[in-house]
Length: 153
Image 1 (cartoon, helix red, strand yellow):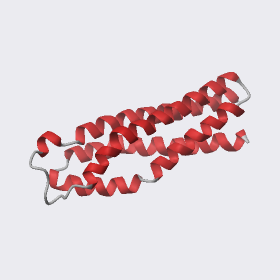
Image 2 (tube, rainbow, N blue to C red):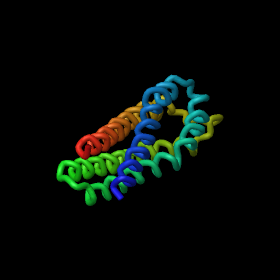
Image 3 (cartoon, rainbow, N blue to C red):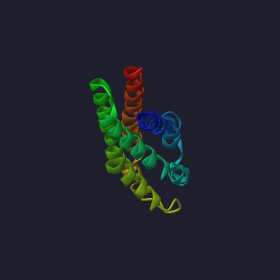
């Protein structure tokens, strides 16, 4: 069973880390640079492309890591799998408490009728910063999962 679960964890964790890395290296800088009137429609377009893909990928990687925690034949592999699961939980926590609320607020905005105090409520820098946090956590989760393979080889 480990020979099925660990590759699934690597695949889904790698997809999540890759998508977050793409958004950190390209998407977030582009969104920050866009004029306000273009920002909201572009953000809405991008967010709908990553949901529900990202939550499903992260949850699958986390569940697989929990299973590997119990199935791995060595203590170091079990500890690494537990660390991987915790890292993916942390990614989901940052997403749900920091990025998703911003996404929902932006989804409710009318690009033709932006808030008068936009300069003071513009969430782009906060979203970018929290996205970097969750990207770092997801990449760390992937590194941990690759390390499990190294320990087991």
